[in-house]
Length: 67
Image: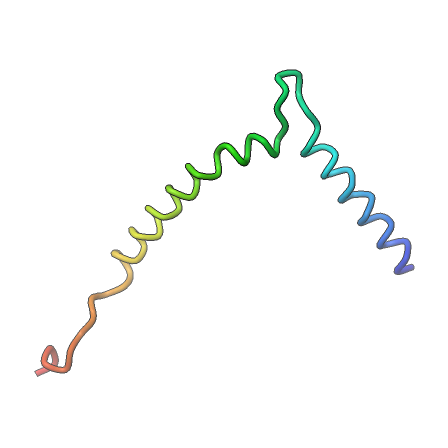
């Protein structure tokens, strides 16, 4: 039963890789599109990370703030 499961999972992975790397009529693949847009997504993620830090991470408090 375990061998059959590995065969099915392997076939699914192989089909996914084949689909992702298949070239369209314009000469590009899904992987090419992802690699072109990745820098934009990283910049957006950094901006959201900074907003999250500013919103939810309070400033550091010192012991004199409590007096």
